Every structure is written in structure tokens, then in C-alpha cells.
Image 1 (tube, each protein chain N blue to C red):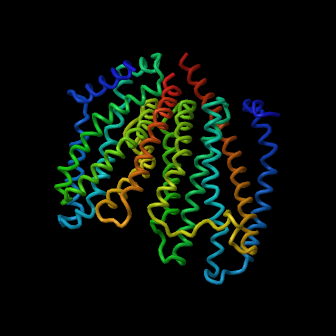
Image 2 (cartoon, each protein chain N blue to C red):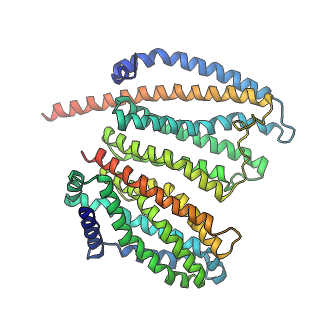
Image 3 (cartoon, one colour):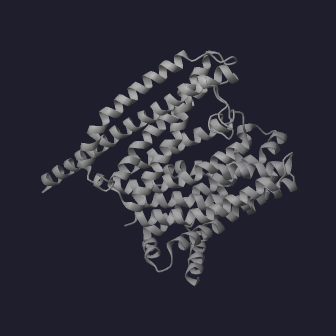
Length: 243
Length: 222
């Protein structure tokens, strides 16, 4: 089974139907473990219990960028290889990515209230995540603006790739503009600065959220394929009535 | 090369003649700047402090407003199909069209800046700094906006969708444009660093913009 075999939607539906329950089960188990570990993790000596927001906030923020990466690969699939599943993958990933970005913003703002004393601060990282959210919404608006899915797919693919090039530039410019958020403390030269007691649950949660995204994405892709089938059946019916 | 030169000449001529609408951008720029004192109050000191930001925001909105004509008019009368089918590379043709659009719609904004700076109580060096940053930065706005214009024309949608797609992409230009003008006026940063990055953004958009616009035209017009 290679990537080209999956170009047949029926084969993809059959394969994904077999994978999906296992993926969902793995997600549920890891989420349960991660949530338990997060709940029992010690309080921070400065931040108290609010540090536990991190276990939800950081995986959401990580996925908000990961999903754009997935969409960029799918966009290449649309433009370069004309893979029929690529635009399905790109279209169904966008709302999920927007949801993760929104959750990252909301949890960040709830965490910011006790820590920085304000829900919103025009800080560099918050601002660049907000812009990422705006770009997700713009992409979804583009998908919704056109009825013909393949035409919309190619336009959205161009925009996704332009976004992938531009997002680092936007991030850099906003960093220049203002900064308050703490610098990266997990992936950095010289090893993480986080204590192991926080690091282990954080990693479990990150993996659980990634699996959650894969589960949701696969399910959304199946829905999108079925939705397109319904659409073409309806059009066939309308044509036959007209004739 | 002559074909591209002819394309640039033709686009400028169309934009400047009756029905072209390039100069409406300047009028819009003037109107936006004239609205600002009503929103923030007629305090001249405050206006001088906000001046660079107001001018940049006005120029950004004005150049956005004229963008959706970039490909739409050519699409309506069929000449866009001829440009796509011609033997010259579509990337260069897109670049030429954007350049012509910038000359017809972007340059007048910069020429109008000194007059508007007067209204906002900016002194001569500050106005010169803002005009210089606009000169370096507005090409980036046109060339990145061209991507949105190309998407909009293939989708037969313009207006708000174009604005929603293009505005987030123009944030870096706005940040460094305003940073450079403020650095020139009040300090304490140096003018050189943000201005150099602003120029870099423009040069970068010269590369990315035509390719992305040509790609979306090729994909979308068949």
C-alpha cells in the first residue's frame, strides 16, 4: 500500500476505517495518562497550581504550528503531484488547526491573568499566534468562497504555501516589535530548563494531542470524502431531472 | 524585454486615464488621514506622535483598495488570457504588472505624503523619513498584495476576501516601516537597521510575489 494507492478514495476509506478505532483508543489512553500525570504534578514554587495550565496550553500551541506544516505538505501534494487526497487533507485540517490555535490563545489568556495580571498583552508570541489564527480563518474563508472544490483547493494551496513562507517572517518581525513572553524553555541548546516532574507529563500530553489531531483529521477527511460523494450524487440527480 | 516594457507602459496608461482609478487611491489616503483628527482629537502634539503610524496605515489601506483592479480589469476584457498564453514567462509579466501598478498607484501616495505630513504637524525631517520608508516599503505591499489579487481573480471574488487574505501578510512591512520612521524622528533605535530590513522585505517580495501570483493564475484560469 503506497501513497498512490490511496489516491483511490474507496481504498482510503477502507484503510482509515481500520486505523481509526486504534488511533482513537491510543489517543484516549494517552490523554488519560497525561491528564492524570498533569493533575498529580507538583505545584510550581512561584506559579502555584496555575502551572498546570501549561499541560494544555503548550500542546495546543505546538499543534497550531504543526497543523500548518501538515497543510503545507498537503498543498505541495495538490500543486505538484495533483494527489486527489491532498486537497481533502488540506481542507479538513484547517478548521482543526484553527481550533487548536484558538484554544492556545484562550488557555494562554487564562494563564496570563494570574501570572501577568492581564488577559491580553500585545506581547510578541501572543500577537504572532493571533495572526496565525487570523490566517487560519482567512484560509477557511477562501475555502468557503468557492463552490468548486478543486478550484478552491488550488487557490488555498497557493495561500497555504505563501503563509508557510511568511509565518516565520511575521514571527521574527513581531519579536522585534515587542517581547514579554518567556523564551523557549523545552527545545533549546543546552537541554530543557524545565524540571523532569513537569517535562514528562508535558511530553505525554504533547504526544496525546498529536494523536488527537491525527484522529480528528482522519475522521474529518472521511467526512469530507463522503460529503463530496453526496454532492456529486445530488448533482447527478439534478442533471437527470433536468434531462 | 520590449513586450514587458510595452505591458508596463500600457498598464500605467490605463491606470492614469479616465476610469483607471489609480488617483482615487491618493484621494482615499487623504480622506483616511483627514478622518484621524476627528477620531483622536485635534491635539497637534498627539498627532505629531501618531503621525508616522497614521500615514503608514493610510498608505497600507490605500494600496490595498486599488489592488483588486490589478488583474480583474484584464480578466474582464480577456487580455489576461493573452498574457497567460504569451511566450514570455508569466512570472515576469506578473512582476511587470505589479511594477506598473506601483508606479501608477503607489508613487502618488509617496508624493502626497509631504502635504499630509503638514496636516499632521510633522516637521520636515520626519516627513522625509516617512516618505523614504514608504518609498522602500510600499513595493512590498504591492508585490505581496498581488498574490491576493491573483487568487481573487481566479475565484471571481474580490473586495473583503482579498483584504482578509492580504492584511496579515503585510504586518511585517507595517512593523518595520513604522519602526524606521519612529527611529528617525524620536530614536533611540538607529534608523539603519529597521530600514535595511524593510528594504529586504521589499526585495524578498519581488521574488516570492510574482512566482506565487503566476502559480495561482496558471492553476486557476484553466
